[in-house]
Structures are given as structure tokens and as C-alpha cells.
Length: 288
Image 1 (cartoon, rainbow, N blue to C red):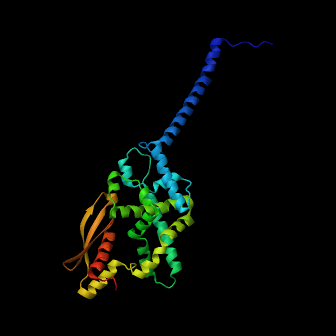
Image 2 (cartoon, rainbow, N blue to C red):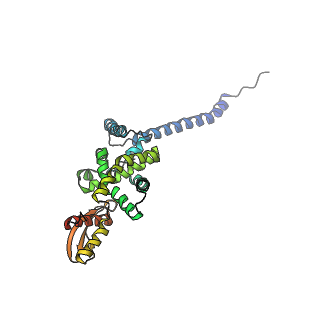
Image 3 (cartoon, one colour):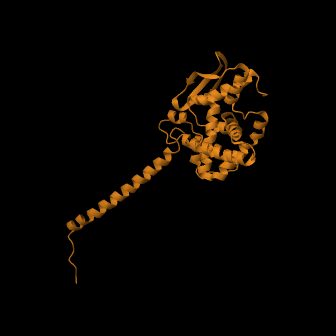
């Protein structure tokens, strides 16, 4: 039996819907591909050429090899070295600064160091263990470890920050060390983070104890000032410089009305500790 043929006009009308649907699907797929491609391009940093990107990643890979580790997420490794000032100077970048990683790394660092000291010094009281820990993870100690590891060459900073090689750079390096520990913890796990800390910081504890640098400077200065001068030390703010997220303080320590020394830090508390330590040197109390 011969079926009745559909007239051409009706056939064209019937084909219009599936053809339009097919066209829409193709256009949508192309759109998604384009977005994915652009996203990948943006993640490579808009104002860097391919050679610069390759050179940067090679630095991070060399850094990994030196530490005998390998990140599965190289972007996470890079993020550990990105200072907020770099992001502020590169408004269009898709990169993220390292402050959240620093927050995490600080907690991991404290746990690892606390566990180490608790296990190693079984008869030392809590107060002294706290002082040992503070000395081991203070800015000077961590920044020195970061420099020795080669972190200074990997920092991504604004042009202004990159010019400062003084104490401000030490604070940035100390924070970067913590951010790196946080990145290691996320990508490679607790044991890997613990090994990094053990290799870079634990060897310092013997000299810290032998030199007496574990003492809490403020408490020690207060005891000595009351003993020698019958005065309780006071601290006054000298200056506070920099943006809110990266402010640096200078504090002065006084015995009565007499100014003894100044100290600096990225918080008032750290600046006071630094001032107290400088007062110990100024008064010749290091051997007590």
C-alpha cells in the first residue's frame, strides 16, 4: 500500500523545530567551550606571557624537588606565595592571596610544635613549654627558615612591597611560611606538613634553650625592672604605619619616665615583646 506523501511545505515546517533545536544545542556547546577556554586563559594571569608563566612554574617545581615533595594542585602551591599587595596591584587577576592559607598553616604549625615539645620535654612545666613554643615560632625564627628554603625568590608582591628588604619582609616571609604549611596540609596531608616543620624548625630548639631566648621578654623585663629600679615597665605607641591588613607598629618601653628602648612588629603585642627584648640588651641582662 502506498503511503500518502507529505507535501514539501508541510515537511519544511516539520523540520524547522528539530533544526532550530539542533542549532541551539550547537551554539550552547560552543559557548560553553569558549567560556572554559577563556577561564583557563584567565587562570594563567592576564598580564604574563607564556614564557613568564613557564618560568614561574619552573621555579615552584624546583622548590618542590628541593623539599622532596610534589603538589597535585600547583595553583595551591602558587597561592601560598601570593601577598595581598600583589592582588591589589593586579585588579583583573583571577589569582587569590595567601591569607586564608596562612590562617590554616598557623594552626597546623602550633599543633605540630606543641606535640613535639610535649613529647620531647616530659618533665618541663606548661609555662616553660609555652615559652619554648613562642620562641620557636616567632617571626625571626620562621622568616629565617623561609629564607633558607628559598621562599624569598618565590614571593609575588606589589612593586612597592618588593623594594622593602627589612623587617617588613621578615613578617611577609613568616606569614608565607605559615601559608605554605597550610597548602602542604591541604594537598599532601598532616604528616607532610609535620615533616616540613620538623626539618626546618625543630633543630633550632637546642640553641633556643641554651641561649635563653625562650624567656618571655615582657615578663622577664618586668621582674628585673621591679627588682633593680622598683619600677613597673610601661609601653607607649610611637607609630603605626601601613594599610589595615599589613600595619607595622613601633612601641617604646619606659621605666618610669625614662625611655629605655623601642621595638617593632606587625601587632602591638609583638612590638612590645621586641621592645622588651631590646631593653634586656640595653640593660645588659642577657646573662640573667
